[in-house]
Length: 65
Image (cartoon, rainbow, N blue to C red; front, side):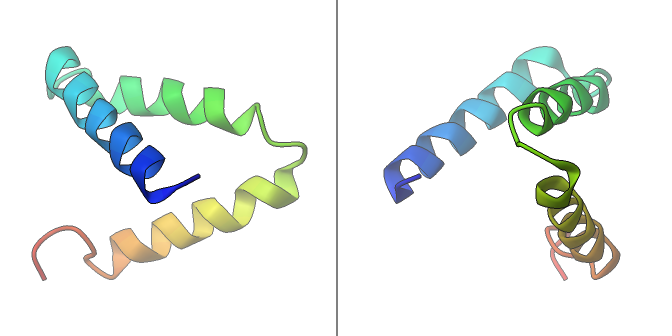
């Protein structure tokens, strides 16, 4: 994915989250995650990405720290 594609996708994600609202954001993100995971060939491709995201959350990434 190019930087332009990534930027376009991120912007679309932000816009979709705004449209669904804060109360439905977890459901939306879960549904999107499952859809994207289903496109990968095996769990070995998914699990490291999940672990990385979990570490970032635990480290406070994205919360202004």
